[in-house]
Length: 571
Image (cartoon, rainbow, N blue to C red):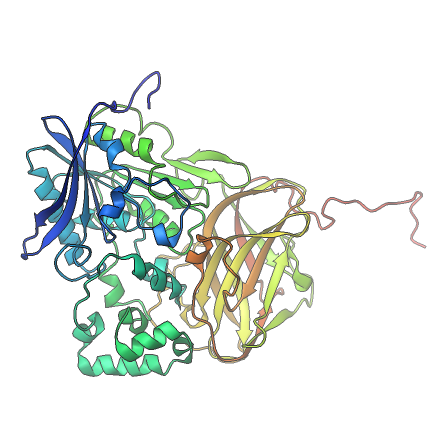
């Protein structure tokens, strides 16, 4: 790639490979590495990918295909592309996976130290010039962001979009609601995981407290209704810590990405379609990152596997930060985002976008969604949630007259009551075309007993829940629930409607493998009747980030004027 002002490193080398290389770690284990080098003497920068999947799988010469969980772990990038342009590409199995030694400890602290030591070992090799970068998405990106706070001396930049920084909120407990299906599917593609005997909860709390937690979990009808969870709780085989630690606490805090000391350059981002895994982490990292940074938010398609689509962008990134080539990658606005419905990109200097007008759309009687405030005595709407009838409520705007763009975070501020002591909120943002066909855009979740907000971390457009205790509902009492809806960017066309659906389950059949990342939560097993209140005293509303259009606002008529005869008469 080149322009009239700059060019990326030229394609000029052949590729040498060394497989089954052992990288020593200070506690006595070794990590298994595949190393790909230019076929030329000299020293080159290293691009490292640390992961938990089949190491040889990362370099298989296969035709790229659309994202699916079976191939989701092929995320290292094409080693030949980088090596031919003067880099050493190294893929390493993390501790306890593949041929690497030790136990698989997920995100607990030894994983960070292993990455640190691997970076420093690589920097000392005779073919390395002392500059190391890290590349990859998902697990690769999470490990790259995890190690930065340790400040490895030779780590100079990371290209790490599609990460998650808070495993509790971003991945496993959406709004405090357990998402079990993703973990059930994902663990099957981890290569040869070697789990330690026992579990974190058992070691951290002691045998007596562990047994109490286990008994509590096995008495939970919502958990035991899921066969895979019930089997794990009975046998101890599987992600039992996820089920026993249903509140945010030491188990989850030990895994959170430390963003307090992030001074090296980082390329961040995600795509609009992966709300239940990587999207929230992109914004958390962006907000907290102190070093040079860029962020790209792509179409809701994730990336093809094996990973190749960011090849030139990442090459420019590493050329700039590892080779010192002034190619202008840091010029211009640091944020690029794709706007669904336009096929086009826009750029920005900050997030949320400075032109954002956060606009309340109120939930009205008869399923209306409108900026108009409430008429007298509007009341409430109800639905049943039971094994026999998983009901819902849907609120729609009139057909839009103006093309209306929204781009940013959203929140549904919902006033509601239930006949039960618990409620699980599943919220969907919809695009309804003139023929009535609906497209699911993004989602939000909240367990009703986790409604407590952190006032210091919450923003009007993005609530932050503490998730440190459960506060059961009093049946039939009205509460305010601030439900975060994961960000999105779309231009709604004239004639389309904006919709929001409120349910207590996520029983929609995923239409794509990517949608499957965002469903698979537990459901309530107890029957309840839910009331959503929408009146002047309880103003339930959807807060939308309008960035273009909606200048006059929606028309109740949908833009269709009634036919009149003149002179106008009232009798």
